[in-house]
Length: 77
Image (cartoon, rainbow, N blue to C red; front, top):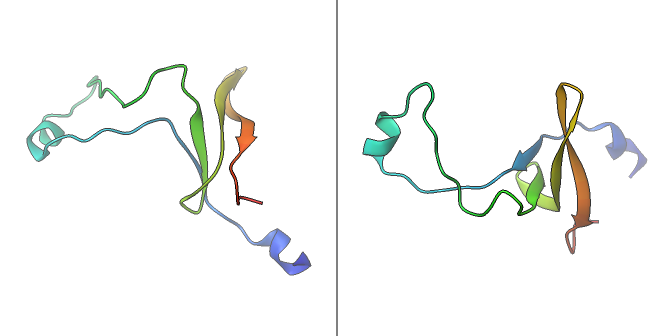
């Protein structure tokens, strides 16, 4: 297990999702607003290599955005 601690992984935060038609997609341009499922106060999801690991919220630290873990999902450890 010790040799795995240096293996890089891809981390991403899922804010929400939606389904749109190809026609709607083709109309997207600068300034377009795409409404996502869920509300602004709902937790975001931290994904590691595409797998859900935790939920939490976005926080702003100066000019940077970060993710604060609120709950580690079952089976993630």
